[in-house]
Image 1 (cartoon, helix red, strand yellow):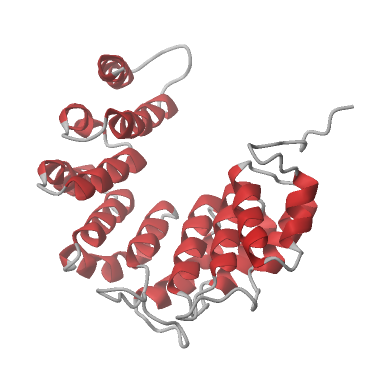
Image 2 (image 1 turned 180 degrees about the horizontal axis):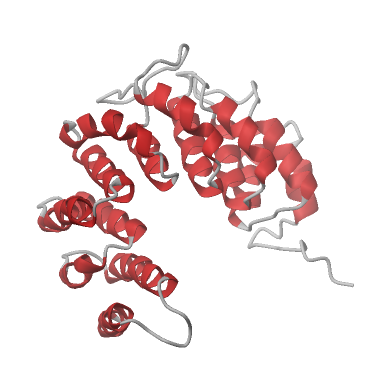
Length: 275
């Protein structure tokens, strides 16, 4: 009988080998194994166990004190969707490594567990002791964009007063994350659309990387009025298609198959034109 976890890549790595490597002594193999288990969505219980254990690894350190293995483990656990990872990932939000905290916040967003909201608020206020800023300029104290996006996805409406100041943050991508969160958290449709429209305006930004960021944000919130602007954005068609896919998925959630809304048909037409 075929093992459902008998996955192989170009290096002929198997699930069993990846799990063994993650527990081995070779740090390079351990970091790769953590990435690999997430990449191939290996949700075997033993894989989850070793990834959770890797969140507390002390051996793999960078010169500036980062934890590369913990980062990969945190990212992988979000992809695997197992609720047993929630508590360990919440603990990881207190890690000194900026990028471990970023990965943990993103994974908790994927897992959708509301129990992480209190510590996310404390991180947003930079009230968690022992956390170090990003090692490179502008040395942000916290991964604000990941935190803001997670609060938005989790529907943390009580955090709106804490999020609003980030709409004027000096880093544009953090402004976008705040607008994305406010769109999701604002009950009044007209006011919410104000935040969606703010993102649409940024699709004409001169900076390609920022346009790419906005495409991802609009796709994540499924903002239908952005459809044509997304299709016309000066960016890679692949990224525009991913953003439009997010809009389409939102439209499909609002209809009963096989019926399609006019919005869904519009988005599908735009996607066809980009292919």
